[in-house]
Every structure is written in structure tokens, then in C-alpha cells.
Image 1 (tube, rainbow over the protein chains, first blue to last red):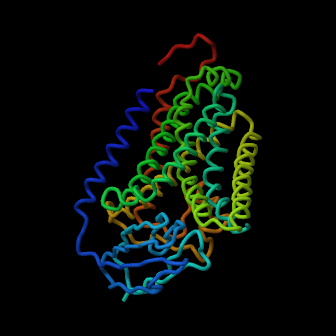
Image 2 (cartoon, one colour):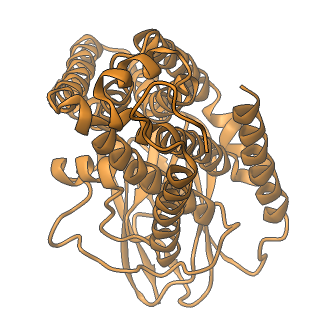
Image 3 (cartoon, chains in turn red, purple):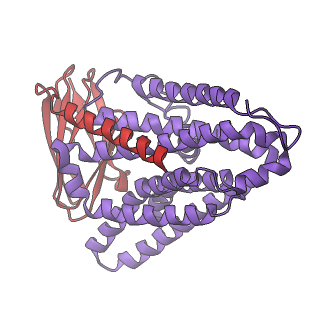
Length: 115
Length: 280
């Protein structure tokens, strides 16, 4: 299984290189703070400036896990019960972007208002 | 209960289809069932671990641990799928020349079963970790509805297993001479789709900020969250709003696998009319 092993090592090395690259991420991103409690986003309609990368920080105050998802924001990330995550969003043109909890898509959602 | 069934089934679709394709691609090879079973078992174990440490994983590597982990294991699956196809291209020409010999060579055990076992494990781990998290959530929430939701989850898993079986039997019905070509093509598209997903995770992690705009938006025609959309998402990597980078990575992966397969096929020994043919 030498070729397999070698290929695996290359793949992991590439991933590690990418990890190192994250350290150089832009710090000028706009920050949006969100929390979720009783399966409701707070604020439900956060705002962010247009044309700047956005970092969304989500704190899950419920004991159940949440999967923050948005097609338009291209976000898909799990946050454990009582946990917190940050997600990176590219610079966006003005608009209303829907996001939701993938486990409760119909009832737990919000809009990121970019202006 | 229906809600739980749908959530679990949705996650089981991708893993189910991939397991079905792998079983069909390795049909007849000794140890292939065992390899797939071990792959599933490793995947379930991995999924439970990923779910149990979801919080730690999310916070690792400056908050992008989850994305990079997903990108890494998806890349691993892509490499394994590509390797399988190159191996098949190398040997497939000789195999196709003699349908009877096909069985013998395949049964010699030289096939990269290990590669496909890894793919099964990755698929089950990726999709399974979300199911495991969902189940943890149910248990954490407790109450009288939990039993109902657990039943729904079990039915969702059963539906996923049924889809897996349907994929396998659908492919297994293809004549052996054609099966290699069909599964190789399926695997190439599967690999391209997974590499595009890996690119998406790298973009989410902020390490690949290029070409982030949507290449197209076909969500009004076919949403990738619909059942058909999800099946196509797995089979050919369909996405209704992919980034330009995702589209580029998809095309590059597909082109690379086909080009390399072609090169390998040309270098492969020519079909032998007699058993004692010369190697070129």
C-alpha cells in the first residue's frame, strides 16, 4: 500500500499547508455576532457592510446542535450544543441573504442584510 | 417523526449512493464486501468521534478546523477514487479484451480495494457525523418525543440503506463487459463532485478566497436541496449556486482523471490474443 500511503501523505501535507495559510487571513473583515436560543436567531436580521469580507460568529445557547447553513452565503457549519463557531463569508453586494439551521430549516432562520 | 426521518435520510443519500457505486465497481472481487463493511464500520466510528468532538474541531486551527478537516477528508476520497480509475484504466483494456479473463484478473486481488474502502469510510463519516450530532441532540433534549424521533431516524437510515441497495442492484444489472466503463465514468464524476465540495470548504475556511462569486444560479430550476437535486449532487456534483472556483476545480478534476486514464490505458499492455503475449 505504499502508493496509497504516499498519496495520503501528499493530501495531508497539502491540507496542512492550507492551514498555515489561514494565519494570513485578512483582518479587515466586518464582524457579525449572532446567537441562537430556543431555536431562534438573535438578531434575526443582522446587518453588514457591502463589499467587505464578513466574519459571522455564532454562539449556540441551546443544548441541541445547530447546523448553520446558507446557500447564498455558501456556509455550512455545525455548532455543538452550547458551542460557538465563526464562519467566513466573501465580500457581498447589497441584498438580503437567508441563513438557517439545517436541522430546523422551516422554523429557524434569519436574513443577513448587506447594505 | 417524519421530520427526523427526512433529516436522517437526507444525510444518508450521499453515503448510500457512494456505497452502492463502490459495491458495484468491485462486484465479484473477493473481499470487496468485507472491505465495504469495514469501510462503513470505520465511517460510523469516525462519525461518532467527529460528532462527539464537534466543538473542539470547530474551534481548532483558528476556528476553521471543521472546514479544513472536511476539505482534507474529501481530498483523500478524491485521490482514492482517481487512483482506482487509473488502476482500472491500466488493466481494463486487457480485461475488456477477454470477458472471461476479466474475472480472473479481478479475482487476483490486485485491485485497489483499499482505496474504495477508504472512500466508503469517508462518505459514511462525512454524512454520518451530522446524523450522529442530530441524534446526540435528541438525547440531550430528552423528553417524551425522543423515542418517536429516534424511530424516525432509524427509518431514515433504513431508507438510505434501501437507496444504497437500489444503486447497487441497478448497476449490477449492467452486463459485466460494460460495467467497468460505467462505474469508472461514475467514479470520475463522483470524484469531480467531491473535489468541488472540498474547494467549497477551503473557500469557507477563507484559505482559497479566489473566484468566490457564483458561477451560475439554477436554484429556481432545480434546487440542490430537493431529492433529485441531492441525488444529482452526489452523482455528478450538481450544485445550484457553485462558486467559480468550484466549477473550475470540478472541470479540472474531471479532465485530469480522463486524461490520466487515457495515458495509462495507452501504456497498458495490448489485449492479448494468446495467453503468452508479450508485454510492450
